Length: 146
Image 1 (cartoon, one colour):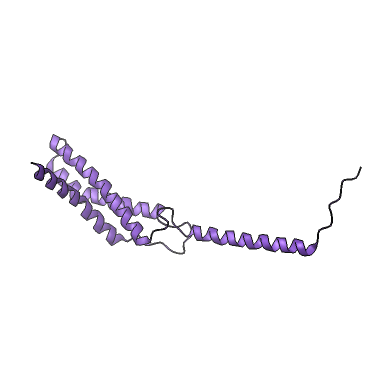
Image 2: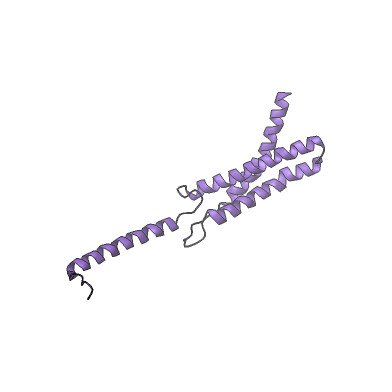
């Protein structure tokens, strides 16, 4: 028994369907390109706001480590020179490079013509101010409560 044969399709209708599908594919391709030009980390934020948020977050994390070092110093696990070195240089540098690496990995779009700005002087300033300020805030808080 021969198989049923499909009805003959109108070529004009088929061409119109193909044109519509091609237009839809172009639209989806343009949307994919727009999404690929946005970074994974905070995609709707401006590059400057993203950099400030990342460096401030890394500085805040280093500030928590400063407080842990201060508590360890109070118990006698860390001496004063080590504490001062970590507060003034070590932890701010770790926070700065951590923010730099986070912006380089998740702060850049998948499809970009050049390298996006990482705002190095601003990040350096934020990290090297936030960490010692956390120590100063801790000192003021402790002295104020006594």
